[in-house]
Length: 419
Ligand SMILES: [Zn+2]
Image: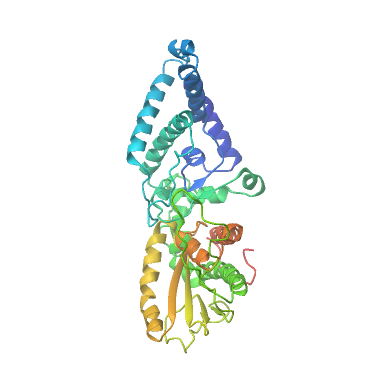
């Protein structure tokens, strides 16, 4: 085990250098399998343990009674024994079976499927060896105040980076931003590489959070507004397409109940969404000029991002997009929801069907579940939805990178900056 650990250490050093990541970045960021940003790298210690436990199981669970009864032990040195790891995995599997599937966040029961349905006992045990390793990594990450901040992200969709993206894109900014290891003034001071931890624009502590979402000077410059509009533009494009493909009818079929254990008949799933039933959808967005809320629906002083309305259906859908620091996404959602409650009520009082969907995209390109759900409500599904989410993510990431690069320079209003 000591040799394997030594090898893993040198792999980590080389990976970090190759990806141009900062030295303080923990190896857990590279290998964690439940991280908010999952990278395609495998941890050598974990793979070694799994391989040894697998071969140990081959002997001990053998169909040949002579082999199974011979109590064969795979030699692994003194530090770590496959036998102990296996009994630990068995214990964990037992506890897991007792516990069942647990609900997380706002997602309902059964949203996360249980994984132990179609796996053999051997596979389940190996999976437990892996989750044992992952548990240790997560526990260590939770203890890290700065790099482990992602463990507190709520209702944020996790991202998985594929090898192809690593080959074709420079992802060092993204990784360093997620784990807050970019050379921000505060970090440079922490690493003893600068004298002052202050933001060059406003003179407050210049952490990454400050640069990307909390600087008053940057806000006054219109930097955050620019980012917000860039993302909003993408969302408007997506909604535009959804409106154009809206179905003119919305005859809902009666609910067909399906017997337990049988599959629903083909073509049963309804393709209707909030836009179905009308093709006269009007779209207003707060982009080039200030959005004025349609007066025949309700009167309001509140500023909307996007308003879709159909006079035929007497239906209005409001969109509010925010770009919060990922830890504060849930808070931003609640705040926006509350803010527009009154307006929604006012529309309903005038006889309109109204809804407001706040959708958050994190400053580092992580999409919140609320935005994902709002897209589904508009009828986006499968590949279309994935593409839409990817576009939004990429825009958020690109704009964040630009704001970061320009953190010390004056802000020039130009049409195609940062593209
Ligand atoms: Zn500042």
